[in-house]
Length: 256
Ligand code: 13P
Image (cartoon, rainbow, N blue to C red; front, side):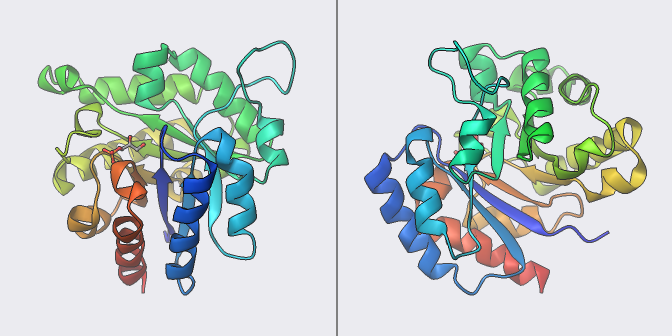
């Protein structure tokens, strides 16, 4: 089954409006000829509107890094799916390990957001992955399966069409320690097996599973060459236009 690569930049808490616009302008110029890869940029909330404007007319898409599952109301400090839709956002990262560990987000809470995103025409990028300690204790598969099943609870085949998964081993995030292509592929193929149990085979085979964790131009080819790695969720390297665009070009070359 053919799955188009998705290369997504998670800028985390970096770049205000001015810096976001400047960086996107550079990326936009260099990505003009890219057709075979979906490219997504996820700046901080305050830059989403400007990012959408500066990408309009191009194939670049804009995503958010989080959202709340209610559409409006007394939820101080939160941003809803309807607000994201209103500023042109197409994707939203949910359940990132930084949200889980620093802000205490549970699988149950993330599940509500994934459901709300799917119901409201936003593609959720659901992040799952084990910590270093869990890997050392051979709990990787157990942890990943539990996160996947709980975060996708109650979602049907029909609803899951726009679902995207990101496998982000916590020990590889921002550490420079990348999972080897073999380790990443082993978990990605396990995730796909579990998706077959949750949904049907056709749907499971169409879901893109991104790898995230110290991905950069130097290791992108080896990772993206694995059969179940359908793209990347890039942190640090997405803040450097040349690195990010090089990863997209590597994916483009692998697709041709
Ligand atoms: P790094 O690429 O900086 O390791 O971050 C990965 C990540 O958390 C993307 O969501």
